[in-house]
Amino acid sequence: MHNPATLSLRSLIKRFGAVTATDDLSLKVAAGELHAIIGPNGAGKSTLIAQIAGELPSTSGDVLLDGQSVTALNAPARSLLGLARSFQITSLCNGFTARANVALAAQAHAGHSFRFWRSAANDSALLAAADAALAKVGLAARAETLAGALAHGEQRQLELAIALATRPRMLMLDEPMAGMSKEDSARMTDLLASLKKTCTILLVEHDMDAVFALADRVSVLVYGRCIATGTPSEIRESASVRQAYLGEDAEATT
Image (cartoon, rainbow, N blue to C red; front, side, top):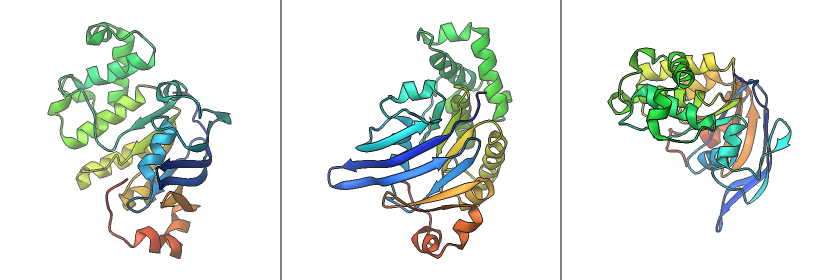
């Protein structure tokens, strides 16, 4: 695993017509920390993650990785620098095994020509990387199971293994606990706690128990603006944060 990355956001703005989804947002995520992003419906959390990943161009502002601007780079180029993300809605090749899904991700990240699964299936280094990632997320015994046959919680674990196969320096997770049972959420929380040691993590999550158990720092977004950043205890005690979010029921992300 590479050294964890430092992420800096400077005055990020994203407008969709008359709607400002990210509003002059500046934020720093220190190397090796788990930084959680929370906020009510329409806060711009998923939009922000897409801007950082390079999937959505910003209207203005700058994204820096270890002090170097990556604003002009597209998502694949940012991935090669160590930015990896998982999505709110799981997206897997259901007809492939768990091992094949992860090996294909490792193959793509290594810059090999994409010659379908057969080339990855015969590459011992890719298979070893896939098996290591599956073991890390607790899916070693499910390596030969088709992705579509895995339980929902296992699919989320597999998605995380796919991200880990790209050897990220920074991992961005959009609602990894979405739709999980209490048991699966507890397992994912333990898994993320162990990953904190090896990479920087930016976590968008509505499970407040998980957020407060995992996060070193928490930032609160409301209408695209960051209204507070602090330790979990500081965020818990903030009256403005409680009013904006923590006192409300959990809702869908943007």
